[in-house]
Every structure is written in structure tokens, then in C-alpha cells.
Image (spheres, helix red, strand yellow):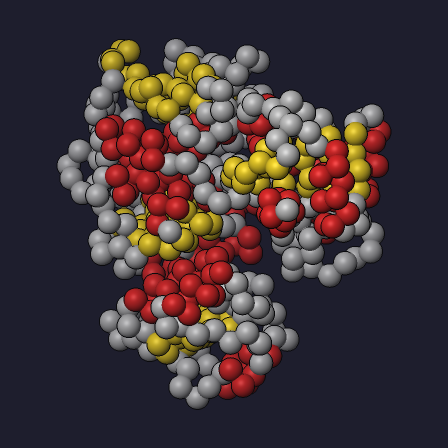
Length: 512
């Protein structure tokens, strides 16, 4: 594999430079003095931003874009060998790096390199953690898979040895990373066009955990089924967190810290961070206290010698010799799932010696990222929220959060993302979407996949109809928009949902 010498900038060409991650690392290399060129299929707000920096992408991917002065080529997993630029690079024998390989090499430049992994919640948790770094004055370099208002984009170039990024399991890309701190939020079936089964997915996350060095830290959700299978024998420090919910939405924090895992069997894991006294305000934003217990020994810190040891805490009332109650922590994003994301971030803050006042400042300043339960506006008295949810678990989390948000009737217009995911989770999609009062469906967003011809959004609609729920399929966005304008009334809540271009529906409605 080609190794970049970051002290000797060269000419790097990015195939697919308009991607949310690719664009950020193109900007990072540009800031280091590299000559950066690239290409993408179409102009976007992301590529327009790159143009303001002096990076001018080509908007047609052709062999002629591969010039004699290019030293290394970066490409994404979505680029196939028949891509004209990729094929030309192979013909020329140019050094090539897949995006994840570049990220792994970049991370080696930082003494504190945080990688946030999990099937769901990576962008939100990375964003919360980024706010923690900023509030503590740690001047981090940040790569996030969304637009974070606090950094006015998806990349922040710091001047410290602190780095934070998302770590995606698709194609095992995060196994090319070089983290010193890893976070695993959850593990579920997804990306079944690559993985064979949940066992293979769990094996991938275990290998990710094994990347961490002996003086590193893994922060992991103890509610993951059989979590000790992922943590036993690791050479790094392990911290766990849990939001083990009871029927009324409160947290069942047992005295000894043991929790029930998602399979219902008793976990052998002691929970270091748990939540209690969860309450929701009129916007569905939670407030909670954190119980911190039985912390393993002291670890490296980013900026000081404040990292917690067993039984220590920067603030809070002592419960017993090894436990403290901290808080309250008030969030400005909805949903109980974000309590879990925040617990992971608090564990990260403690590992890095970030004090409690900075944690509370960060949470007060964090109001979400684009496309994560994002308030878009009002039309004819009804509210439009946009959300990136494209997996049944994410849909359930979003609709559960919406239940605490002020509304009369809850409408969701959902655009399934990829044929393989829709087929793999067909019944789960129907079950999750049925949490809404009314379900509107558009065609599947193909993304990287060809149409196999044996799955469509109508299949989801048929299963929802069996539940005697209100569901309508639309063959075009225009048709859906006309229906929404005619049928939604004041105080209704509309969520545009999916990982494709479904956001356009809400934005079109707001233009009218």
C-alpha cells in the first residue's frame, strides 16, 4: 500500500471528491500544502465550497482527468473498476488509496485519534463529541458525516494532536483506521449487500476493537447483545454505558450495575455510565442524570492530568465508594437514543480529562446536525422535520422522538434506501413505519445498486395495509407534494425520512 509522506506534499487526485467524507479529506490535504484535484458526477454545495478554496473539481469522470503530474489517487468504495478514471489509473500504474486507507494514515498524525462506530448514531455522537472538544479548547481536527453548524461544514482543521471522525463498517472500511479511542454505539444487521449475516458484522466490530492500543480506550454500549464477546481479552481499557429502559421510559439502574442485554439474558458486564431520571420537555428534549461507577484506572489525556480514576469524578454527589451521580444534563436534540449517544460522549470526555462544566456547555450548544430530526419550517400551519433514518431501528428511534414532539397527527413520507436493504428488512420497515398515523412512500433510492426487479416500495405499502394503517404510495415527488399540500392541516407534523433526496420534498413545500 502506498504511504503518504505528510511532510512532503504531492499531487493527490480524488475520484468522487464531492462525497461528504472525501471532500473533507481533500480540504485537509489542501490545507497541508498538497496539490488537490478531483472529479464528481455533478456540482453540489460541497463542490462549490471546494471551489472557494481553490480546488476545482471536474464534473465529468473521464480518463483525460488523470494527468501526468498526479502522484496518488484517492477513491471511494462506490467507485468501480469500470469507472474511466479508475481504469486509467490502473493502466498507468498510479499509486491508489481507498478513502479509508487515507483516513487511517491521517489518524497516525494524531496522538488522540477518536473513531466513532456503530450501525446507527455515528454522525450525532461524533458531533456531540466535537462540541466537547471545542468547549474544552482542544482545537481538534474533525471529520463528520454531515453538516455541523458549529464548524460550518463537515470538516474542521485544527492545529493540535486531537482528531475525531466517524468509522463506518461498510466494506470493513473502519478496519483500515488507526484509532487510540474507539466508540461502538450499537451493532445490528445492515449493509447486507456486503455482510453475510450478523455474525460477520459482529466479527468486524470485534476486529475494530482490537485495533486499539494497550494505552487506548474502547467505549461501548453495554446493551449490545452478548457484549462481553466483543470486549473479552482486549488489551485496551474498556468503558461501558447503558440506557436500559423500563416500560415507562425511565432507566432501570440496578445497585450492582449489571444490565439486561438486548437478547434479554443477564450481561456479565458492569456498566460504568448509566442514566436515570430521564424527563422530556415540550419539544421532546431529554434531561437526565448520569450514574458513573467502577471506572477502570487512569488513562492518557488530551490536555491535562484530570482523567478519572476509579471512584473519582469532576463533579457530582457520591452514591457509594465507587459511584457518583452527575448532572442534570440537558439536551437540545430529541429522543431517548440521544441519551445513550450522550453517555458515550461523557465517557469520552472523562477519558480526555474534560471537566463537567465544559460537558454541560457543549450539550447546551449542540442543537443537532443537518438531516437528523432537523426542523425545516412550517407550511399552512403544519411542521416539517427532516431525518436521515434509513434503517428500521433508526425509524423507530425517530418516530419515538416524534411522539414527544408537539403535533396533532404524525405523517411520515419515507424513501427507502437501496434495494438490498429494503428487501432484507421489508417486514421491519412496515412495522417501524406503522408507528406513524399516516405513511407516505416514494420509490426506492437506488444509490449504488441496479434495480433487481423483485422489490419495490409497494411491497412495504402492502404490509402496512395489512395492519389497517393509512398508507399511500406515490410514483413521483410532485404527486406526493400535491397530496401533502391538500391533506395536511395546522398542527400536523410531517417527517421527510430517508438517506436519499427525500429532503427535497420538504424544501419544495417550503418554497411554495
